[in-house]
Image (cartoon, rainbow, N blue to C red; front, top):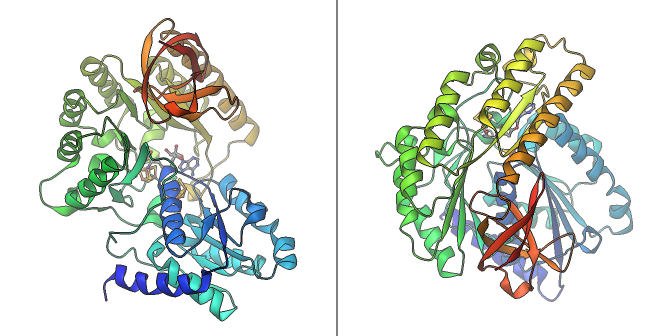
Amino acid sequence: MSVREEQQKYIHLMQQYTEGKRLKYHIVTYGCQMNVHDSEKLAGMLQEMGYEEAQELEDADLILFNTCCVRQHAEERVYGNVGALRSYKQSNPNLIIGVCGCMMQQQEAADDIIKKFPFLDLVFGTHNLHHFPKLLYEAINSGHMVVEILDEEGKVVEGLPARRASNVSAYVTIMYGCNNFCTYCIVPYVRGRERSRLPEDILDEIRGLAANGCKEVTLLGQNVNSYGKDLNKGYLFTALLRDVNKIENIERIRFVTSHPKDLSDELIEAMAECEKVCEHIHLPLQAGSNEVLRKMNRRYTREDYLRLVDRLRARIPDIAISTDIIVGFPGETEEDFRDTLDMVERVQYDSAFTFIYSPRKGTPAARMPDELDIEVKKERLNRLIALQNDISKARNQLYMDKVVEVLVEGVSKNNPKMLSGRTRTNKLVHFEGGSELTGEFVKVKITLPKAFTLEGHMI
Ligand code: SAH
Ligand code: SF4
Ligand code: F3S
């Protein structure tokens, strides 16, 4: 029996169970786009099993927490939010609660969750997402907690349904896992080694999306630049980009994340030549000091990074560059930190995600002496944020009176009269308009650039 056939068997059994019950699910997702897309796949399976989505947690018969463990803070939120459901479960014994995702892929964290929250029905990791219908069926029928955490990642499983948040813009996983082992990072331990999907599977999926009205795809992987290396077919990320660029009705292509060590000249060339590839790159810097970069096992220097930025800007003049930066890595001196500020000044990022280093058990950095005071870390973070905010503001100011192409995502969350959408450079734009424009490309003249968003009017 193929993986999908076995899954279909349990989906069918679940359909018999849900029939006539009008059961609803709610998924709470933490972490990166990878996890967001995993939740879309869980939702796809739930829809096939006969569940409907509940907008509010309170209305759900099944609640799933798809967890992240990249920083301590992400884990704490899971404990708080799962714990808060104890009383729900007492008042509604039929409620099914599950916890899955990266945090559960760590045996210790999973054991702890199971011990602290014995009322859970279902616990599973990242490697067995496709077993979800079976696990859910067993949890419902056995009446006790079902736990399945696989040690090994196994083969890539194709053909899973996904229920995407948007019809217009879609996430498409091109590879799973990571081989880089940056010394601070837990991801390789919870997502396994790099496994690329076959080009035809990816291209078929995108053609299918395009046929359903999708206009923008974001190709996902922890390090998309090394796509295809494990397939040994000589078909690499640049080839994939060029092929996606040929798919009719897809108008925009994005990708995350690019590791600077693997950003080749060929890739920059492909980005410049493929008209659908957007003028934006997320290029995590992590630190500006060569000594810290070395201790992080990032395998590039600040000089290498600056050369990449020069090349990108030479070939794609309007490119927006965003980044991730960690402050307070073990042993980071004031001078090291100033190197980070210096890099931020030099590169002039459009935006940056900034984090205080969080030791992750089992990673090499967690064993390095970490003598920095939390107050010092916070103070550094604040200095970094203040500098970046000024730069973001200045970068956005360049859009004043410019006309930009915006792909309308929908009605703005904060103001029902406004629409929001993104420029090719990934800037969020707010402007007045009717919701019927969702999914359309419109031209917007920018009249009010702010630090994090742009405002304007349609022309
Ligand atoms: N694969 C991607 C993203 C990984 S996680 C990449 O390589 O860029 C997203 C970000 O979280 C990382 O870029 C890093 O800045 C941050 N991060 C990862 N581990 C961390 C830790 N232990 N403490 C603080 N930030 C961390
Ligand atoms: Fe983590 Fe580094 Fe892999 Fe990114 S490239 S997921 S930071 S180990
Ligand atoms: Fe993503 Fe967090 Fe897992 S960043 S890969 S959800 S640990």
